[in-house]
Image 1 (cartoon, rainbow, N blue to C red):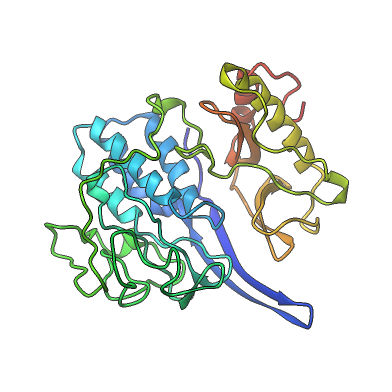
Image 2: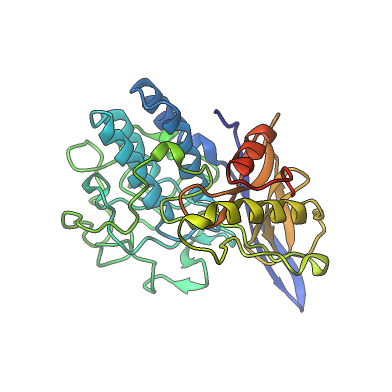
Length: 347
């Protein structure tokens, strides 16, 4: 099924008990980052896998995922391309996606992945930063030169700061999509060059497989990346919801499906009690009034899922846990019912 555009806002919120908070809003339509890749995938005959991989991929641009989730998603995009006669457009757009800036909750640069990709086509690629991100400080208050501030395979900070191989001149405008600015990923053999970046970005042939996706891509979850940790729902609710469950159930093996469905129901029931003024823990995700919500500065910032869609906790299919995503009510009910859980969306 086709999901609608999801606009996600990353708010930089720093507050002191002795002063007023300072807010900076950076918005990007994250689904635009995979639109061209999905179109190429559809044209190549990828079927329903195209949208599933696209949605799971653009979700990695949120502030919450780890530094390698975007690269893992790009690997999944390339993996699917290779099953479709190594479709050149799909690979090109996956390379550009791997360099799209991510949301920053603090208007600081986002750390770089510190491991090699699975696919050699992604060697030497790392995300650009938005112009509104600090070029000298990374998320967590880490100064340039610290852990995660230099891309994997390089020996010196990126120069110009915020640039990437596809846009070697520097960071891109807040909220813009790299794929709309260039069709050249800047890899070897293309006219774009990243010779201006500091250090060497040469990496050896990839032999690691840190995030091997499921062999059955058609069963992958829209909010789940290959590690099973993408947007995992474990929000800390207000005092009235302090008993919120972890998204990862204690059951293992084949027993996790029913537990996933039941835990998704419990999360949806808890989400139904939330409002935009509910107390929350920084960086956690939830659903508030059918909208996707992320906790920023102790309160929820919501993003509408769009016409006909709701935000819901869904059971993962291939591993233990749940995910939070935008979907139709019918799809959410069907996914929960497929686990054997009874009682609909909230149990």
